[in-house]
Image 1: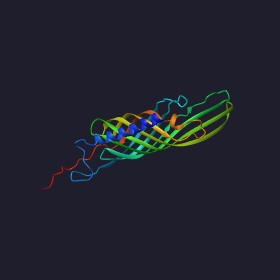
Image 2: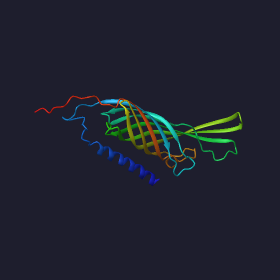
Image 3: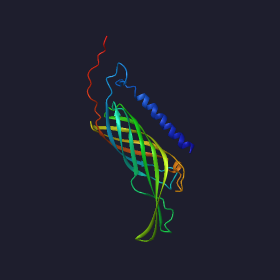
Image 4: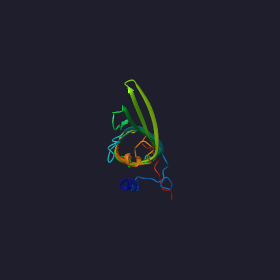
Length: 228
C-alpha cells in the first residue's frame, strides 16, 4: 500500500516538474503581459484505449478498456475537459464452476481530464496528463440451473480514481494526432461485499493509446512590434 502510494505521488510530482520545465521553450508566450499575442482557444476529442497490467492481484488480472475524452485546448498546449472509460468485456473471477455460478466484473470511470502538450508544433512531442474522478466496479453473478435458465444479480462498488500518465504524441495532420503512453491508475475505495480490495486489486500500471481529432495548427498572428 505504501509503495503504491509513493509511486503514484512520484509520478504526479514528475508530471508537474516536467510541465514547468517544458513551458520555458523560447517560443512560449504568456497570456498576460506586453509579450502576449493573444490567447488561442480550440478543442479536440480523443479516443482512448487502456490496458492495465496485473501486478499483485492475480485474481483481478488485466482490464482492457475503451473510452473517449473531450477537452478545450489553450494555445495548443494546456487542456482541460472530461472523459469516460469502460472495460470492454466482463472479467471472469469465478473461483469454481462446481455450483454453476459465475462472477464477472466491469470497471467504469468518468471525470476530469487535464494535461499539457510540450512543444506541440514538433512532429513528435511529449504530453503529460491526469485523469481523475469517479469510478465503480460492477459485478455480475449468474447462477445456472440448466443451459437456458439462470438467475442474475448485479451490484456496484463506488470509488475514486486518479491516473497520471505520460505519452509520446505524433502530428499526422493539422486535425489529427496519435499517441502511445504509460501511466499508473491509483484507486481509492473500500471493499463493499464484492471480495475485491480497490486499492490493492485495481491500482495498476497502464499502457494507453489515443487518437485525437480537432484543430491543432495555431492561427497565424500579426508580428508584434515593441512601441517606444
